[in-house]
Amino acid sequence: MWKQAIEDAVLKTRRNIEKHGLRFPHIIDKQPDRKLSARGESRYQWEENNDWIDGFYTGMIWLCYQYTGDEFFREAARAQVRSFSERLDKDLFLDHHDIGFLYSLSAKAGWIVEKDVEARQLALRAADKLMKRWRPRGQYIQAWGPEGDPRNGGRIIIDCLLNLPLLYWAYEQTGDAGYRDAAIIQADKSRRYLVRGDDSSYHTFYFNSEDGTPIGGGTHQGYHDGSTWTRGQAWGIYGFALSYRYTKNPLYLETSRRMADYFIERLPEDQVVYWDFDVPVNEDTSRDSSASAIAAAGLLELISHLDEKDPERAKFGEAVRRTMESLVENYSTMAMPEAEGLIKHGSYHVRGGRGPDDFMIWGDYYYLEALLRLEQGLTGYWYESRINGYRRS
Image (cartoon, rainbow, N blue to C red; front, top):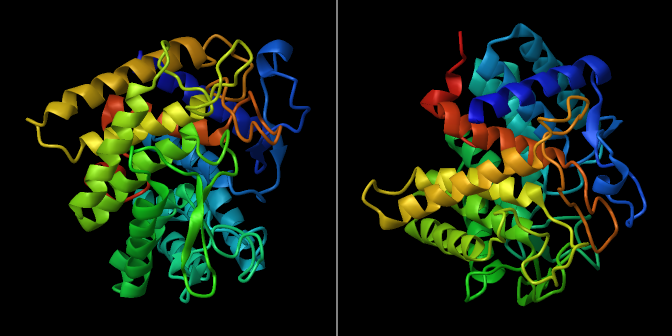
């Protein structure tokens, strides 16, 4: 099953490159009540490299190259890395913390796969750009907006846990402890303030930007401030497991476990989550297949750190199997050869009316990453490992 799904993903990625060149897949602009399932939409909206999501597409192309060894994918990935270099040179649409999403899966991936020195240098420059989000007075990485912004000046969000690997890696490459220290402080703050006592999570938390005094938690894309946005919970599972990989702090591994238990215990019958764990469910409630894909990849990372005799290892592995089988059988576009996306029924910002039921490129990326972890042990580009250099002959 995994191999067939991977081959379908590779074919669709090739077709997208051939059709759209250096453009990137974005969420289709539409009215919030127009559902993908109702209108039979099978495409992305293709734009320039100007959104926080664009690295996921490049990451997919690198994964396709490692799986196939096909020079077509290598050249496409390298061309996109050059696009990311131009974007950083011109400082285009980078006033946010998602530098890690953008450059871990493009430039850092180019270094991991090919030991491309220019790609390594670009990734280090990107890490420096991310460090400009560090606020010394408050001791956190500000998610959005300029320093001192009245609305976002004291905001952190749980997504940032997946941006931190760029900083951990930069420390390993340079020995500059500033990268690592900032990442650890951010991870610690996320663990303390974004994860609730019952192992659920806030999407966002606010601090006084002058002195770092905690103010309170809330949401931007969840159902309400006290609810648990499923994609945020998935970011926590994967993000804390990655912070454990880099630091070996057992508290991070414990937190990843606890968040995973919370996620698994609340899975619906078909094993793919709705967009928020607390939203009332009816026939019109949006799913978020992308959250389940992130969680599956994150669970595989978590499992890799557990002892063979750990009783939770089998439970987490079974949850991955059930989720991935459902994604392949019920959500994938394997029966839709014209589709540009890999999994249907992702959601972006349901309350805001943007992308309530559509393809999400990050969902496609994590779906493919999870498939390749299951099939070949290929781990993606959040860290360097022996298997990262593998390419099928």
